[in-house]
Length: 542
Image 1 (spheres, helix red, strand yellow):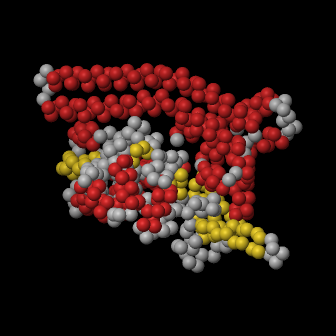
Image 2 (cartoon, rainbow, N blue to C red):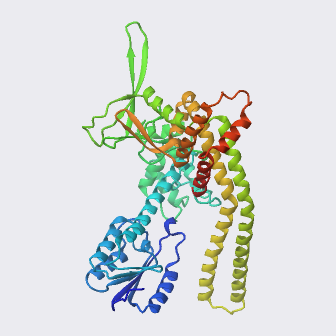
Image 3 (spheres, rainbow, N blue to C red):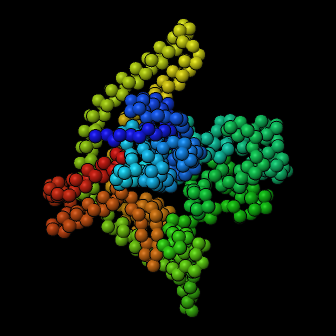
């Protein structure tokens, strides 16, 4: 039975941000329309409608804060909102709402789905607000992981520097950096003037702006500080650091504007010889590991020991930089010992060739089933897309005949254009989803199969790439490295343990003789097929 509500005043609060966290949330106008109707139906008195387009992942929303202030001052005692995550996606705002409700300052929160009262069990509300906050934390981690992955593939993941642009024909997250046809040659001419040695950077900027008409991508003039940043940016000859000041350098795949020698010469002309240029990695794991005691980065150094008999021995040690904690007590660890620990971690997820082939065969069978389902989904989505296009054509025709005024035409076209773009994205995503997850799955299974061997025999750069693909949050404490292994590899690690146990019961496989037997053994295992399905689900959700 629904509680009898006292005659209290309500604020209707609607929020939607442009960030990916709110991609599937109804628009502000839609929220207001539905919630106003709900309030009328339940006889809830709305004294003000408040809305803002801002993320709630951190405190500081002005409209929300003003609403809280007005409630504390007695301006209203209730809130109507779409869901609790419209009010808060961070623990500070979430805690404020919960505390005000428990104290009775807020007497009622009405969402589209349910009511919240001061006398209710706070557990459900805490869970819902906690889920909203966890969603933001997961989103941040996924974004960071995606940006890091893009950098490792050789593409600078953030804003392109002047002279370059992100390919507008590619989807978000897959946009490689290409030449900006309007500015690339002009920026190159600026480098030529600098290399000639006859002009100062400010003079070059003046020539570029006034004589050539060079502007940034927003149409504004280039700042004086920007010209120095351009002339000291290694990106133009093919290298970039990501994140900034991290010490992680990558070889870019973009078309270079200058050579490395030209870059070096410009640094001499600027009086910065050898200063801003990156140092190529002599140590594979620098910039990747943090100290487990003080949180500072772990660095490396080389020590040369010369014996009396003339022999020379080279040693590489990793240790805390102590930049965050000068009194940090962590000791040095040799690179060989560090690599030995990494090999042991890789060994734990190593899978034999027979299991790799069995796993991929079963995953491809699931992929084929999804392909059949994909056809049905695509058909329905294509119908919706065609209907939207037809409706757009109708609106254009009505406007041409004078049956629709300018204001209504723009409003309808704006809504329909957004819907068309959304349906187009769905069509593209559905068409590529199956191929994407099976490709990702194969990459991870190949990694599990080969990573240990490649790490033991690979170059320094190959070892670095393998470690970065293994996981994140690398911590070194008490001479022991710990890694937050990515979820698909954790699942494979569990399967690898089961596979080793199964193999230990049988004679070693000789020339494929027992391949069919192992296929049968894997299939009969009570945990391998369910865990393989978990891997598939994991990649679909990535």
